[in-house]
Image (cartoon, rainbow, N blue to C red; front, side, top):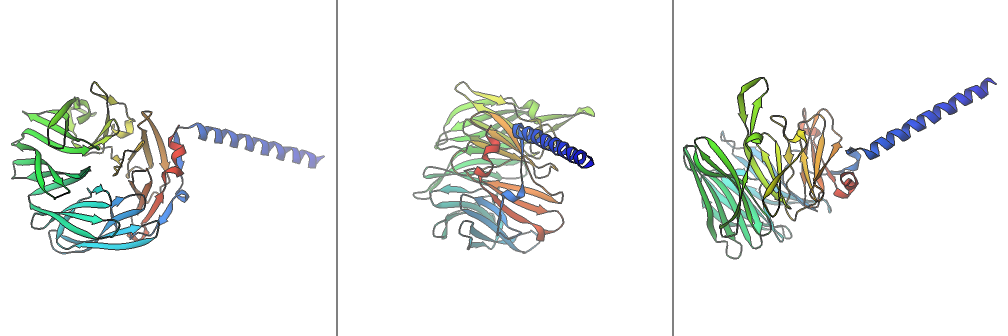
Length: 396
């Protein structure tokens, strides 16, 4: 009799556990917040101190710093290509006197275009053939360039540069480089002097046009516009943006203390404009036939000052999804915005408390993850996750 009672109790316990497990699974399947475990990722054989500058469906371009040369932190760097499908590494070229090698690159066919700056203020533009692994310098010019960004439209490269003329004057230039003859000509130029005038903090392109974020400042008051240019620099359309509430943040403990953020990047994705700030805050606008409308985004992406979120940019054609990540958050949540539905989904990636996760993406939506250990560079690792491994999580 005692044995029957014991068996009955065991059966009841198993039924309860099974029922609880079913409830738990049901809750997880209907939640809008999902998790991706580390075992979903493929480990990649990339050097621990690699600086990733490009990632597509089969190749990764990265820089390795060889040594510090002088007090100006001028560094000798070597550019490598790693084909992670064939597991082969190729050394492409060295930058012997480069002080900056920008992460901005452009693609046109089988070629990659990479601008960099030398210690003598010489700006250089490289053309790298991804099939033959050959390279050549196609353009050089002198300028006091602070930043330079490059884009590709058809057979034309668009070069956006910010040049410090002196301590009070800064020039913002958009140049066109024709790939048939490598001729370079200026198509848009703005000069900001003594804290007044017009300046362009960022641009982006689609397959036909250039989109610039234009700021007009008079008496320390700023107005923001998105200007649409053709390839000759003709302004075709202007959208005025109301960014006052987004840019200015009132200190809750002191209402008279107003912090001001700075728009750092603009991205033209499908029919949307994504703005990111110096403090990692996100604002999104949707383009329509009458103008543009502000899109509601999760509070995590803008409420904190700083918020620390990055938009994962990519080269190539527009994808269905936008990814937003914050490497400094203890809870490692990626926000995914679906351009077709206008809705957000959040995905949690596994993260050790001793690591910082740094993300890269390609045009198909695949993820390259760099796990940086806070205490040892020897514990860094690189992982690869195809988009179709977690697509079911981001499509409702």
